[in-house]
Image (cartoon, rainbow, N blue to C red; front, side):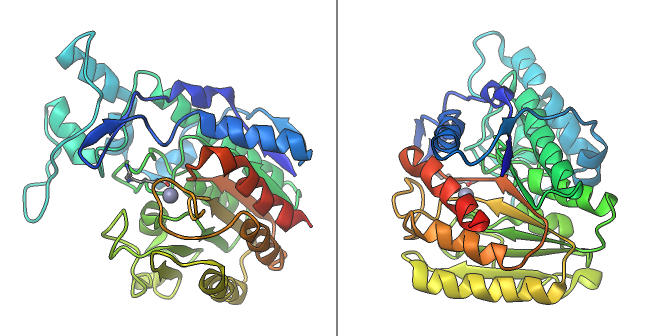
Length: 343
Ligand code: Q9C
Ligand code: ZN
């Protein structure tokens, strides 16, 4: 399988994130890509190629102009306010309940307006890294649209929490959604996105919630206990023309292969019935038993089975990297899934 990867992901390397009352080193960091590339080389999964550059058209189909304008200029405005020793660019308050959700004039208010959480810092060069991740996704998508059975977009930063109007959960632009949109433009009538990241893909769900042409199915730890908390319940089935094209499988903390595999089979049967022309996998491996921020119990060999099960759909398949924070085993688990698919 061909992997697309860019060195420019290194341009997004914030000093830290807020986690349980402390400012800690970021779980989402450049070593994640190193771990995956090392395993790709070790297993000879296939060639690793740099991305082509793409314009912003497809990004604009997925995200609204105010968010994109903010992301491009946030650091400059933050530094204009705080000077050369500016603190980490993060919000610490939010417009909840019935407050006036009007985009504020000042930059600190804008962070509160656009961010989902205080875990997703913006640095001077984050936007360049974000754009490179989109280029990675679109370059891999182009391979699949051009006839490859599958390709792996080694995106960083990840994307599935980014909604039309908000960024967060380590995500800025929704790489998988942009790629799904690219498949539509390339002539696929129906596209399915299957999200196996530990966290609910609230962003991807929101982007396609009212659309029948892109189905979204997600297995994730239940929002009753788990970030992003306010999205991911089983009764979220899509709306209007999108009704019936959204499928959530919330799982309890502690879920291991048996229950996970059963939910996966169910999701795959739903996708099979939908009959997509292309499949996008939001590939998170933070379902791993040793993941430092997660509470599912998948083992390294389980990822081979996930890959095998996805392959049985026999669809042109694009894998887009999302989460996974157990750096030591990140490459192993990710490549296990890809090798299971290829077996
Ligand atoms: N500091 C993805 O896996 N909550 N995002 C962090 C620990 C945010 C995860 C809590 C988790 C976001 C792509
Ligand atoms: Zn995740």
